[in-house]
Image (cartoon, rainbow, N blue to C red; front, top):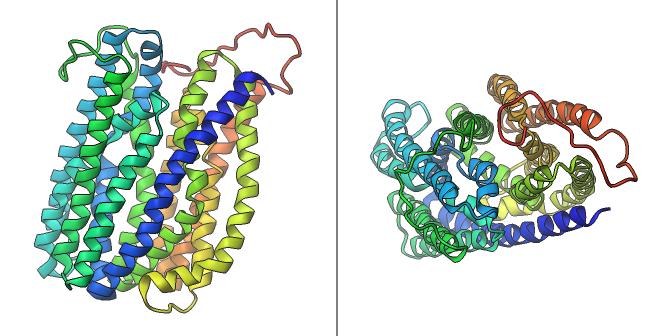
Length: 457
């Protein structure tokens, strides 16, 4: 293995470690604050809380532009080579995208509650508070600051923002439990969590920019010049649409279950999914740490290095998945019973099905960033479209037939389809640009990857 490959893997695992520490703290806190919220509200009202906050998260994911990816994709070269004015214009584009999409999300979320709140199983008496909670969508997106953290190799700052949100939600839920506060209070706690994370990430993002040399004359209204970041709107919309379709898979399934089976079953479905994804989260957090390393190797046109890194990660994720299944067998049902404060019949099999979709999703972890970096994000988007068109009718039919287990099995089928769709173009690309093993000589001719006008393609 070359020095570049070893350094890339070292940074990937080191940065993933920071992300894991933040999410692990959040997961531990979630076991506490979910248990307190269930005990304070009861399973029915807690289900309404989950449906309202899930709807807001789904609208946010559906409307916000994923600006950290264009910031890395187009900002790495000017940032690394000292072209601060050009980088400032790319950053201004990304910040505007965040704020604009946040405002659009707030308007759509408010309209959605007014039109569809009753159909999603929310009592009419709770819809006023739900509509007010939609204001939270305006400050849910902290994508540009996450991009700055990743560009500066300061992933530990993401851990700090996650920690700030987890502490607010845990302390707030504890106060609500001890003083027997109701749904309106818990919606306020969830909203304040997002606000604190927005403020902390924004402040840390600006501090990191100034620490890296600053941007004299920065203007939020600065426009990109001709020839700078070609195709940035197409790239931003493609990656954001991919994220949108992923949120449909993750969020709207819960909303469908709530509409079909009611808030209590939706709460069980949401929490069991949270447990399954939480167990698999350490490997999933590799994805944001992988992007900057693949971009560095792409700039060097080290295609064999990219191939080695992706294959090693793929094999390690496979081994890790076996371990996860054992953990779920032992602890899954216990965690579900403890968090919901009720024993749910068939909880272990439900957790295993949920973990199955999470594990299949792990296979996409090294594939999606690679396809994005080499300019084939359209392949990922095509896969998301196919999966979404398959998943929504599938989860509806299987939930009607087999209730919660049917909904969980539908997620497994959709995740398997997505893995197969992403794997096919990656294998074809490796065969074209990095066939066999790396040649023994050092002077490897550069390979031109055709088929896109995006940077790095």
